[in-house]
Length: 131
Image 1 (tube, one colour):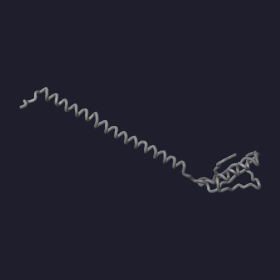
Image 2 (cartoon, rainbow, N blue to C red; image 1 turned 180 degrees about the vertical axis):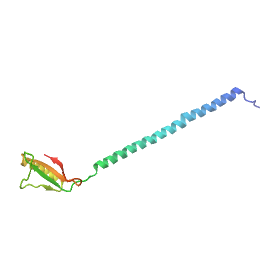
Image 3 (tube, one colour; image 1 turned 90 degrees about the horizontal axis):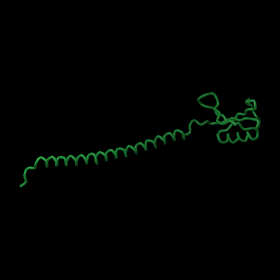
Image 4 (tube, rainbow, N blue to C red; image 1 turned 120 degrees about the horizontal axis):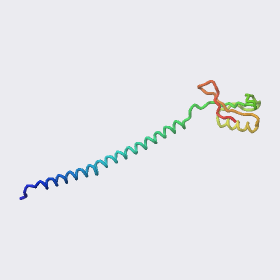
């Protein structure tokens, strides 16, 4: 038959149990919880950055109010608006108007050309290109 444990044995047993609990809580439970939290938060932050990038790209890339028609205005050396007979000045496409404008600059080097379009917001015309 075993005798009653003495005080030193009880204290050592209690210290061992507390040490085991301390090591388990601070060595496994808390680090696993914290690292799991930061892994999830890291992926959430990355996902949020991707969404913000995609949203800003979409807002910048989508077509805004594009004009329906473009006009070419001719200016002489005194910056006075003039008309040249025989040239086309009304276009429905930006690239075509720009191409004609470059050709006109080669054909008429003493004149300046501006590609303009009517804006819905104001009565003034908006200049897109000027050569």
